[in-house]
Length: 115
Image: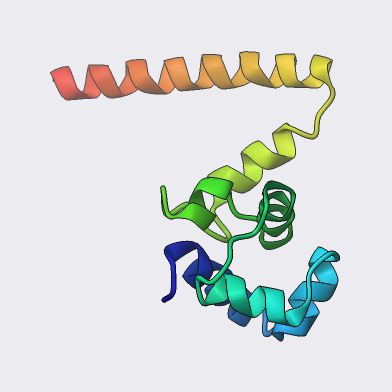
């Protein structure tokens, strides 16, 4: 019985044109049989493997579990992921820029909607 988690892992693996063995090699502490079990809903990856899958496939953990559809290639997710790699000072600067930009965007939309 496949689970949504298993379906998503299989879908992402196939998109990368990988075998179950190749994915197992990337994750490191699992066999091709283990990947097959995940994909068929017979077992679930542990927390550390979920994080590895999320990082490798560049998707959110929520996407893997089916809580949202922010999947592979989502530009906003990719941008925020890159931002999280900045040091604290750079993150604070970026937050200020984003806040000003978003506030300005929202004010502009409010003005357009009132006309």
